[in-house]
Image 1 (cartoon, rainbow, N blue to C red):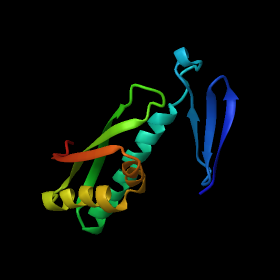
Image 2 (tube, rainbow, N blue to C red):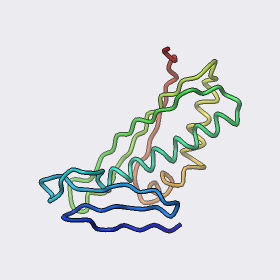
Image 3 (cartoon, rainbow, N blue to C red):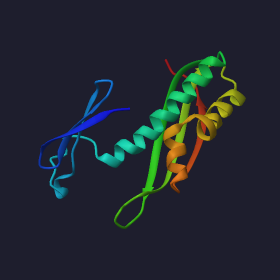
Image 4 (cartoon, rainbow, N blue to C red):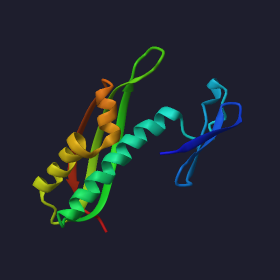
Length: 141
C-alpha cells in the first residue's frame, strides 16, 4: 500500500491514497486550523467503521441476505493525555433489509470483528478495546 500526505498551509493537509482518492485533513481553529477537513483521529475511527461495514455487507450478501442499508455509528474514547490514543471504540450497526436472519446478521458482525476487519484487529492488538452491537431496523419507504 502506498499513499502520500501533502501539507497545504497551517495544519491543513491533503492525503491521497495509492488508488488516487483524496481527503482534506485539518485542525480545529484552537489548534491552528480552519476546520476545513476531518481530523486525523476521526479518519482512524472512520477507517475502522468502514472496514467493518465492508465486511458485514459482503458477508451478508454472500449469505444471500437481502440487505438494503448498513449504517455503522461509531463512538470512541481517547486517553486524556498526550498522546491521546484510543482506549475504546464501539460500533453500533443498524442494518435493514428484507426478511433478514438475525443469526446471519450476528454472524456477519462477529466474523468482521474477530476474523476479517484488519483495521479493528490491528487496533485491538495495540490495546484498544473494540466492541460492537447491532440492530435490525425496518426499512421505511
